Amino acid sequence: MPTQLSGSVGSGGMNVRSDVITVQTLLTQKGQRPGTADGICGQRTIAAIRAFQAGFMRMPDGLINVGGLTWQRLNSGGAGAPGAPTGPTPPSAAPGSPEFARSMTTTVPRPAPGTFNVGLTAVSNRWMRENFGMPRETFSQDCQAVTNAVLKRNVARESVGPFTVEGLRPAISSLKQVFAEIATSQPDLYRLMGTAGMLCCRYQRGSTTAISNHSWGTAIDLKINGVLDTRGDNRVQVGLTLIAPIFNRYGWYWGAMFGTEDAMHFEASQSLAQSFKQQFA
Amino acid sequence: MTPATGGDISGRGTRLAAAGLLLAVQVVAGSLASVTGARAEDRLPACRVVAPQTWQGAEIQWIGRCNSGLAEGLGVAIARFNGQPQERFFGSVAAGKVVEGVIELPGGYRPMRFKGDAPLPLDERNQIIAVFRVASAAAQAARDRRRAAGDMPAAREFDDAAERLANQMD
Image 1 (cartoon, rainbow over the protein chains, first blue to last red):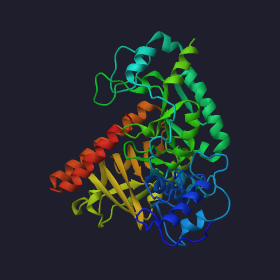
Image 2 (tube, rainbow over the protein chains, first blue to last red; image 1 turned 90 degrees about the vertical axis):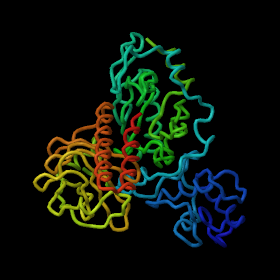
Image 3 (spheres, each protein chain N blue to C red; image 1 turned 120 degrees about the vertical axis):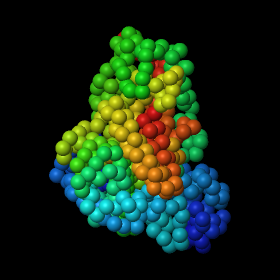
Image 4 (cartoon, each protein chain N blue to C red; image 1 turned 180 degrees about the vertical axis):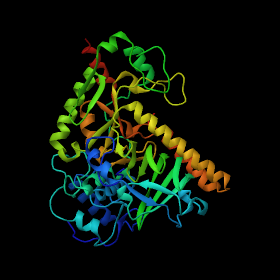
């Protein structure tokens, strides 16, 4: 493996093919996902560079300069993210430090289609209504309680580890498993996790027919260090990219891949929601 | 208010950070880019807004009403740091003190609500939805001020900000 680049690689770089292959190979070794090492510096490679930089730069620029900081980090020994091959490299800032917290809320471009939620199908309003019924008869723009008797019987308020939520009991049980794994694999990030709520029966904004997927208690919004990822800007917090693979493994669909990016949002996929129904009291 | 250094205003980590960290910062004259929506007539030297400690040393501007030398009502506070990305607070202020709103950070939004100088927990979804509504209304108030002043680019930017804030909790 060459130890020097002949030119810059990444966004706005010279992108000499052999250099790009070197960078792609090293990014993969560091736990990033630049795609096949084909020597073409496309969006996926640039996104992987940004994700890698997010571990030590406040403002990742997607560019690797010859001999620059990113190159030095990339070319240093040791594989990054041991045990977490599906997410970006954890940042190098000291755990618990303000720098670490900031690095977790640094944003990177949202992942390319097909990189998350593989094999999962998002639920629709109609699908939820057909499978779970309406959670209540009337809605407004504010959260209201579930009145559907079956659903109500299965609503609980419990801790999932870093915080307490109100939601459908089987969904909470699943979240406990998710956060137990996060506590093991990303303990410092785990301590920064919070929520902006789970169960909330209400209309989607501006609608008098479509209701929020939070209305059934099978969706949750997360915050990292008290900060909510900005919806719809096509960028996602680094911390969310680290935990999304875990959510996916347990059948939770990540909202970063919605038509309108909503990276703070995770919801039970169709298959997971079906399994909840079988656990109803 | 601790927007940048790790205090979670709405959660457990924040409470230790918040109460003692408020700092009154005088609104100063400056030259923010027009994208912030700030103009000279907003930079009243006698108007004060209570700012987060993490904004200490920043150039802070209040776009909103001023009553007896203190920021009042819905508006936007803008902080600019030397060479650092700016942060903005959208929300309501009473007698110069933050009541509730949202700080816009490079990494997203931090919703917050205060009672006196003490931050209140913000874990309930309805509360967070309500705070984002206030923040959106504050952005609209700033938009209206800029529009009235004939600064249409800034008005449009605040209009976009109001829409983003309104859609955040959908």
